[in-house]
Length: 234
Image (tube, rainbow, N blue to C red; front, side, top):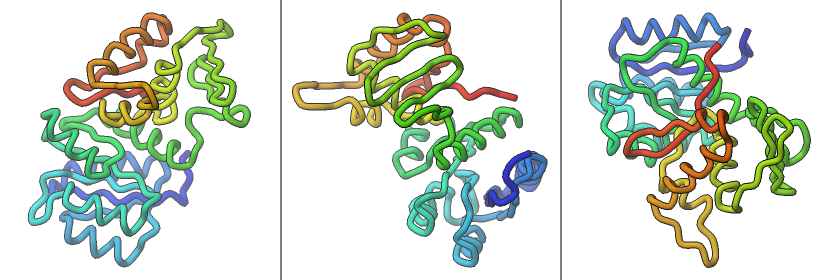
């Protein structure tokens, strides 16, 4: 059962979809409030600024969901925002992420995947996923990364990554379940004497998948947007 102190605001104008998302969230033990418009959501946000997660539809009557992401973040910087939208074009997804959304899902969606994404966002915000077994060390599905010593292993076997590959994989692992655009990944590994472009990111991911073997299958390509490490679906 999830932490019952977690508060989620679901903003969706289609009643059936809104109630479906709320039902699955309630089954996990979260405290859920529903809003049918962006304006209604902003009123609720002003009344209660303690929500840990906002599930926002993009295409809402009046103000759109993406139009209020910055307002949500300004009011509650620690909150996570999951965009749920029928706008599936890469440029739309990138625009939503660049406006401040932490992840997105396209409609129609699988409820199990929806809940998995929600859990991944909340764990990320709470610093609980991937599992931290020691200071500076992360574990995820047999992969162990130490960000102090730059050591990495999978199922006990030491792997040898370049510094750029390590930084790239580290960003994806630390944001497990969330999409990172190529621009965000470039910012993560860009450094003195290192010139990185989008195609460089793709090359690094190709190399990582080869070196990681079966674990590399977890690195998911989001067409025209970037990459993420797949979440586990319970």
